[in-house]
Image (cartoon, rainbow, N blue to C red; front, side, top):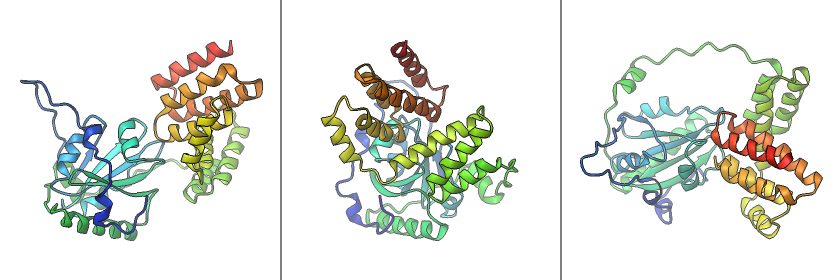
Length: 308
């Protein structure tokens, strides 16, 4: 993905999202799904058809969040007085949209203009750079005759008139704060060290355990070439390292069910070292996805059966 420049060529060759996310027409007499309305909307795999429709009126910025990363663009988008809308998408719960927009990390920011997706940038930019990107997006939308505006709903109006006070948060424990700062700076190695120190001080620190699993995944993905790794995994179906590399990308896109199946399918044919490597990685994935996810429960039971 790239943040400059956005041109009309960005629309050519883009994936048509309508076939992926537009839900089937409701049966005769069935009530229509309500549209949340307003400048800022929550979107899912099942409701993205509304966003496609909206993109014929105004360009829609699509912000993917999740894995502890919060959506942050709403205050800035509201400043455009309805000329741009925002759709926020939980990347851990909407695999169709993650795949359609080729999301490999959160946050990731994309857009839709006249029903067509535009890849913008992964990560987050400073406000001046964001404004530059949004101005380019408006210019591109004008070229596609998408020049309307939408009215804010009550929530938008309240947010514009009276911004909420910043919540008072308890300070993070020292090693957690150091890890958080290191992640923000892209220094995954330091973040890993800080989480390991936190766990050494308190082995029951579940936040540190989950943080270590997450930042370790980010470190493995940093600079990795998915196409090359996928080709290697295809030629080495029983190679633990090759399959783990592809599973990392699947988990990062919210496709943990594919990653779990990939690793559990090869588990019985691995040597003891390979089994231990896969078992350890699966436990990390369980921490990343969360124990309350049904897919984690099913995978954990299957792993237990394979171990014993």
